[in-house]
Image (cartoon, rainbow, N blue to C red):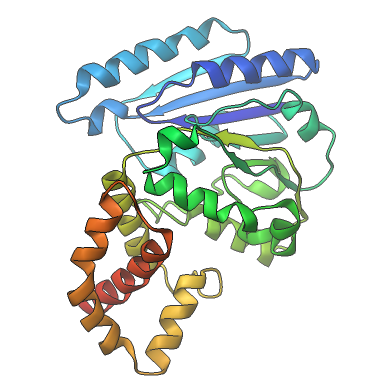
Amino acid sequence: MLSILLPVYNCSCVALVTELHRQCVECKADFEIIVADDGSLSGAIGTNAACQHLIDENKVIEHLKGVRYIIREKNVGRSAIRNFLVSQSKGEKILFIDGDLSLDNPSFICNYLQTEADVVVGGIAIGGSPDRWKGNLRYRYERKCETINTVESRQSHPYQHLATNLLVHRSVLGEQPYDENISHYGYEDVLLGKRFQQQQVDVRHIDNPVLFCDFEDNASYLAKTEEALRTLFAFRKELKGYSRLLDKAERIETLHLSPFFIIAYKLLSSPIKNCLLGNKPNVFWFNVYKLLYYLHYAKNAI
C-alpha cells in the first residue's frame, strides 16, 4: 500500500491532491492520501477569515475515495506534523510531499512505484512566470540552485538532498523519522538524511519532480531564512559536515577571523537587507548575509 502524506499550512491543496488521486487511480495503486492542516488558524493573527476560507476550500478533497483531511487546532511544526502523518498511515511505502507544491508530471506516481530502493527522491522543479517573480528573492535563489539540484548532482551526495518529495519504505523510516527537537523552521530533512547515512540506507535520486511555483514575499523569506540559521546554530553539533555554511563558519572561527565578520555584519547588514527586501534582490548578497547573520547570532548566543 502507498501512503501519500501532505502537511498543509495556510494554503490550498485541492489541485495537488486531485491530481495525485487521479494518478493513483490510473496506476491502479492500492493507496491512501492523508492531508493534515497544521493549525493554520492558530498562527493566523488578524487573518483568521482568510485561513478559514482555505481550510473550507480544502474540505472538497474529502469527497475523493481514499483521501482523509485532518484539521489540527495547534501548529506543531514541520517535524511533528510529518511524524503525526506517519502515525496515521498504513502503507508500506510512504510518500512525503508538501501541500503547497504543484504537479504537472503525469507519470509522477507510476515513476515512483516502478523504482526500487529504500528511499527514492524525485526532486523539485522551479516553475512560475519569470516576469511575475523576477523581483522575488526566493524565486531567484531557487533558480540559482537548479544547477546543483540535477539528478547527477543529487546522487553524488545522496543523503544531503532529501527535499520533501521522497518515497520511503516504512521498514527504514521508523515510527518517528523526523527529529521533533527541531520545533522551528529548517534542517529537519538534513537530520533525516544523516540518519539514513548512518544506517547505510539505499537512497536513489530520480528525475521525478514536483513543481515549486508560488513564492513568499521577500520579507517573509528572509525571516524564514534567519529562523533556519538559528536552527542551524542550535543543532550545529548534529549538523557538522552536513551544511556548507556551517563548514565556512567553522573555518572562519578556526582562523580567528570571526571578529572581522561581526564588524562587517554591523556595517553591512542594513544595506544588504534593504537590497534583499527591494525589487532587485541579489543572490550573492543573500549568501553573504546568511554567513554574516550566522556568525553574528553565534557570537551573541554563546
